[in-house]
Image (tube, rainbow, N blue to C red):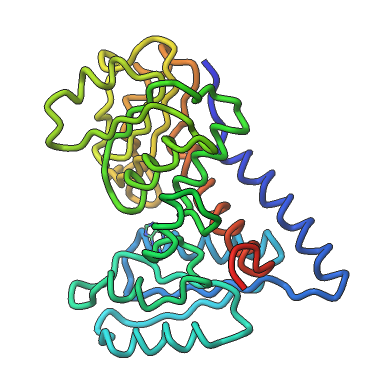
Length: 292
Ligand code: GUN
């Protein structure tokens, strides 16, 4: 069994990005600049955004954090998005999700200029990704593809089961794993209402679990030699930890890991790659790689 080290891979990629940034700057080019909008004080969002700012520092980027209280109106938030769209010093920006209930996330996402949408959530980027055109690919699926590539996990012609159908992970992952230029796999998407979920998993060569249920994928559901990617990050209360919780994946790691060919741990697997891919998208934005 090969343990896929997302933390080390992410550190290596961030070093590669930093080297490229310093080359750009030494030739008189501009430092990439990412802005992040954070609404309210959700613990998970605070941590993610803090880590995004730290990743910017590690990559030699400029970063700007814009905070609002959770009683901000949709109108004010949309005006901020418009301001960031027009700000030429900012290459790309993200609005951290989830947003408070009184704000339409879809409206906010669609207000972002797709050329600065380094999250890859705007329908133009989602659509271009689905038909294999150059675009910002959302960070979690992009990070998983990068791990599969760097660890040379065989995917072409293999059966890949994706657990979960979210817009952020399940749906884009399925699109990418099916495409010839990425996974080139035979893809099945399972979700909470899939009658044949267990059987599909038992027949899979690759399982990408993004269902948000700790320990959901058990050893009896996994074919020996399968490759397992765990996207789960549920916070489970744990009094022995300083933070008061621990992160739990969707995979019963203890019993599944001895069976499989490759596996990602939680934490230290997919998580660190996600932020690192946001940095890659921001570098692409600064270089105007996809859009002028
Ligand atoms: N919330 C959870 N994941 C993400 C992400 O990748 N981007 C944003 N903007 N919000 C998130």
